[in-house]
Length: 357
Image (cartoon, rainbow, N blue to C red):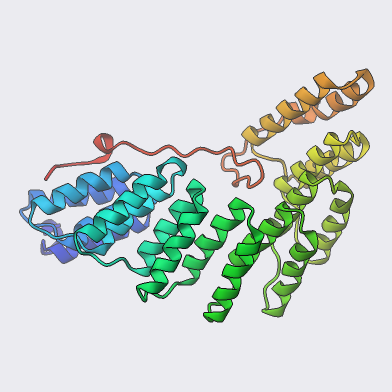
């Protein structure tokens, strides 16, 4: 940087690191961090916080733990930010909710008061881990401590009870949110809708869609995919064409999830005529699933074919024919919310870090 006439100081280095981090160029941010130390410029708390935030988004808590140790070894005292990053990194992974809770307790033990963001990160961890009771206790503790919940806090708590299938508490939380003058978002609407629909409360789910318009929001394709998924699982496949018509009225274009849901729904009840029809519609519209999702659909249909009688088997194999088999994988497919088979792989610290403390 000196060759370009830029003075080497912590502020400049931190600005560069922050820019790289926000662009998800974490290796480049690490390179700047290493250069900073090599030039004799002492990293600040902000330097470490920037890296920890980046690795939190990558769900790499082990690296954050090492950065925390390194930070303390230089005489810097971590504040609430590093611990919140650690809670987030653990909490975004299904089987690490206990580690997120442990990080939260460690933060409190060293005398750091949790913020709304810290509590929200812990609530999200409990939601992912299926610990909805603990999520509600944490929420009550938060209120007792005088920490005001944000819309993200309520979103995490609502999601915990959606996952648990407890629609009664789901509505209780939503009413508290409204009383607290926290406005609904598309996400909170969708959580409530999905919670009701999956429990067979279709009237309540429909009421949620009606509420969208009252605050100037329009349902999305995801909204209808959730409702279709619930109807399909609940044996209400006869309702699906009407939902498709509603989508058309709202100028919402069905995606691969919409069609895959309908195809499997009709195959399940041996209505192969409709399954064929919606498969053709899917191919015609160009809304084919990504390769992995298509393979999963084919595997399901293969199993169905093996189980059914000869006539049914012939019909099903027609769906698993040339057009499905010749699917070309797109360079970048969008996330398939229905099948959810995409796995994330965290990078290891040793291959990414440059320099040491």
